[in-house]
Image (tube, rainbow, N blue to C red):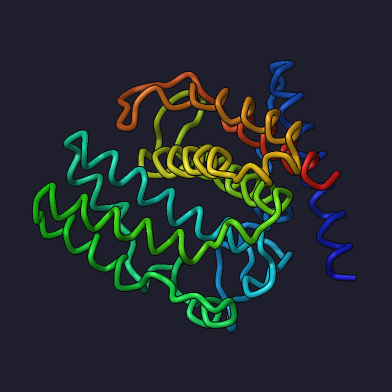
Length: 268
């Protein structure tokens, strides 16, 4: 019964988001869809890894593979943009994206990792944050980042997941990216660069996830994967640079629309 509610809520979210994107293309004034009613990205955390977005639909990260992958994808996204900023010389900004085991995206995952039989990556998170925040130098940062990515990959176990679950996780990540972008960019003006950057990281990790699918997973949903790839690559124009000043030619409705189309494709 719970699964049926999730599916119909997902379809509803997709239809709403598609409606938003369509209205935006007609130059109408719209209010972006938020995670309040439709997100399954499990941004929050609860006992035993039971998470939810800002709304009422819950996902048990111990058993919901799509939500679990989405959570780890969001962590990856923060780190991806942090490293990009670091490599481009924006050290102060990079530090704000480094995650710690006590941060909200990781906190509460202990029971989830235990239930899934994986070790997690708390120590590796700490080592990277320490290397960046204490300015230990490029070699220490890059080594810590590579080690952390290996630990996250081991916890994801992507080979055990279906293409459908991977696509649903991507939809959830892109919807969260839309929420962040809607806060970061208003009428083309940068209002919150951190949220703009988070959305960038989430989207790039979604692209990486899609490109890392195995041959078997690619065969399982070839047409849907190809459609998703085009949608994701088209989104890259929303981020002309990682550290913009002034204005950008972007709107969150493009992200909401893409998330909706990916979700519908996966559910069908």
